[in-house]
Image 1 (tube, helix red, strand yellow):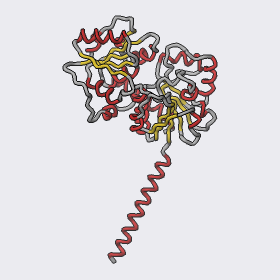
Image 2: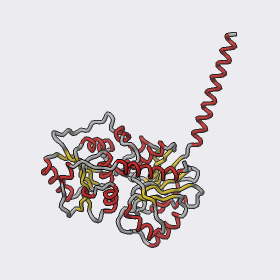
Image 3: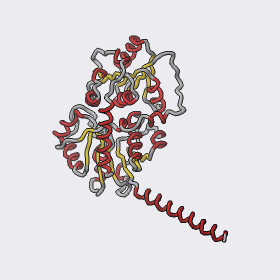
Length: 353
């Protein structure tokens, strides 16, 4: 009798296991794969953290993200490779096949800036123009304050954009340019790095310790290109505030951990980078952003207007108010949360949740 009971129990347990495996397999088979198309993979810290943030948010929403871009010889792929699914286009976008993904998403950042021959593919998904697949744009940026595309580019882009179910951009000031040249009014969404909780960034530096210690407060200096006007500003700021400085320079040995660690530990930030500005906001660091007029002012003025931070932005020829580096940030949290919700809802609708 005991043997019979054990046999029944054994069969019951195995039946439960089979049912669980069936439901797990069914759930996985129903999980949509999202191909996130962007510009080339490179060492730019903001670009890589943007890809990280998009991946985190898509996972939170129950999708499987694949971060896709062309290869750049000096790119260190370690971080993205460790945190999400990385796909490198070696030759051209025809390497992507129709059945590879359930949805294609044009990534945020300067995906509507003509960097190279792949422009129509990374910005407008030309390689998939005839595919019966859902396509949308999240938070594209033109990269400049003036229209840089030719009439031929305009016509091709307009043709390709007709295949998209939803389109959004990152900068408020680009709306009129896009209306004029592309013939529609896009939705404004936040940069993806602002959509996830900052704990995800702090997780990156758990157990990490930088190699340099400071005897007093210091300014974190993050520049995409080191210039005389930035060096002069940092020197003056350190003198006025009696701070030290830490320069984070982009090169092949740059790491995401180093960037986040020293920014988090700093007392203030000086930058000429859009994402240097964004991460100052995320970590609530007093900052000043110094830009060259030719370096896409709209990217800075847009986020400055959005969060009422315009006093912290300076054109390189202006007199700089270094006292901004000791004034706490005043971010309207309700506004930020409202914009996050709007942006995430756009993404949800675009993904058909």
